[in-house]
Image 1 (spheres, rainbow, N blue to C red):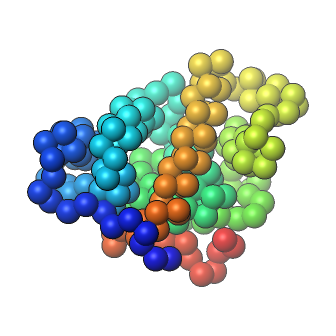
Image 2 (cartoon, rainbow, N blue to C red):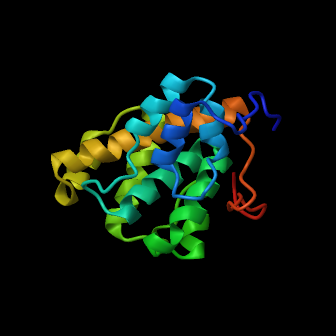
Length: 185
């Protein structure tokens, strides 16, 4: 993939640096996605303010499963790899589970019933842009309304993030995991 919009390089304008300082841990340079979006400081600021990586109403593992599956379906290797590398320790996912997020159809033997429902939620949103009554009823056994809203918004947000990294040609970070040649794309 060719880079279509080159990420900005330091020194950054004060407002852009403030946003980078908000999203990045101290001493860690800003990721390529943020440096690319920084070409539009307003969008960068809104993106950072509207992120869902804070402590929400769902667990980190649930959040990351939704993100990984969304990015996998959208073929957003950049974002998938950043999240695998940045959060896999906190999720407790095995390498097989991480790889399975890339499968055309996730394998039920890797996941709990609740996790399979999350994968089905992402798949259904991706394919149909809605959630059918049966899946909604099953999800409602495990998740309250505020959690369902967060899960749906998370899938939608990372669909948009996938648009950015794919359409702009954001190059994969050198430290990030990559889609394996052995796994379906």
